[in-house]
Image 1 (spheres, rainbow, N blue to C red):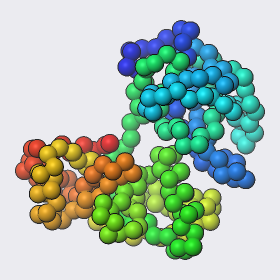
Image 2 (image 1 turned 180 degrees about the vertical axis):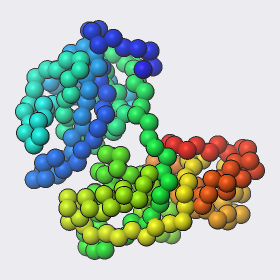
Image 3 (image 1 turned 120 degrees about the horizontal axis):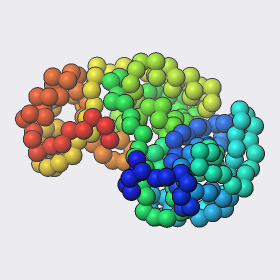
Image 4 (image 1 turned 30 degrees about the horizontal axis):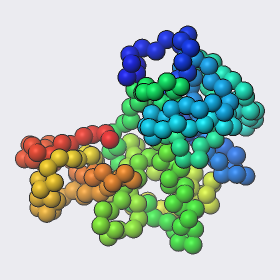
Length: 247
């Protein structure tokens, strides 16, 4: 579905949906590839399209057809085709691209994180690779990265669905970015993205509940709770605050 309802694949206007981001497909160049599913119309190399999330137009340079490690530049694609776009940071999972603005396809739902841990870089001389790896893996949807809002703790906190994802993050940072890490598990089982009355939020924080308040990369506040019961308690006592399971 889209903001305009169902979009027929046979219409003339182009539209597409970014459904996957993959880093390091070519380790020699450390590139990132965004995978676009053409949903309608005709895609053409170098065409100018509207990027719904950024609310601006971008040019589709260097589109590829991929098969394993092999890739070839293409000139056009049609509804149902998958196109690989070199991603300099313009694209994220769920982005809509179209030739006629505005149009936005429904995003891909994310799972609610239930495991949290502090990710520690074991070699501070490789902080640049560490930060780049975190950013690229988060773009892929491997995990979500949270930070202390006051900078009291420099290490990022990973929010994942299952414990195995910690191992995946560590292994990929080691193999793809040559960064050795360790994870210090945290005793929380639930996260909520919160918004609403600033005074009510400040009051909740000052009462120093047993949880932890953090921020995501966009600066939105995230509260961690030890149990769902504790989360429900705060939702009941702070009706001025909206608690969302997902961003």
